[in-house]
Length: 308
Image (cartoon, rainbow, N blue to C red):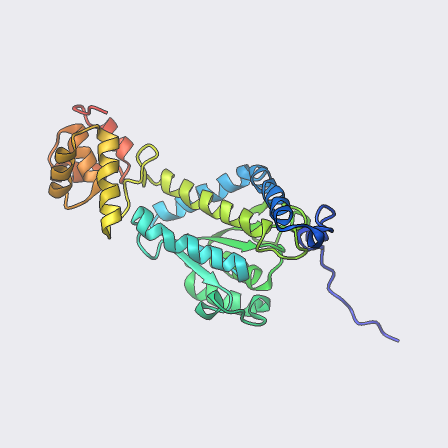
């Protein structure tokens, strides 16, 4: 009798039973929540262990964006949904062009709400989508709890062939590093509270990593001044109020002066900031920012009249 050959996979810790939660179904509600919370507290420490690798990924993303290229996210299930969320939030928060961060989710838009059967197993589909979207010089960040999702790995391999730099965020430190992946970010959050429910600690770790990755990228690209969001787009009353508060906080100027500075800058917070701190008109402030690549700190350093 011939035994069919099998593909041997290395089990992810997220698929194992958690010895600390075997009695969770016998606990009172508060006990269940305390146990979940106790497990969740393990996530920041696990993420902290992979910060050097995450820094490498940030530097690759900054290099790509500075040279006129794009950042792509590729994921499936929870990973893909988190990637779509992160990319969507960067546009209003940092006023980045909508094509700077491009998410690719197995199963497309429909899979954001409903499970699309077998989409994550479609390595060919992932490869086709990334082949069509990625250009040489882009950066691609893949996300997978298991470390081996075919759609993600197929997309990363295709991106590598297209001349993009790549990184993989994996919840499985035991998985083999895929060929062509420049940076492997393997975070070990251990067994889930409910075995295999990777929307829990693995998902929390991926959300933490994505937020840190994109925020650090924005900081390095000069989209902040100090710890203030000076590049955001004020599209509603709440954000217009926040813009005014940020300008007052950054400059110490009276509210009316800030209102007038924003008016002269057509609502551009960076230009208004330069105007108030350097005492230059809006056009000069805009030119100084252009010369600094949009970095307020660098523009201020070049301003001899700067009061900051």
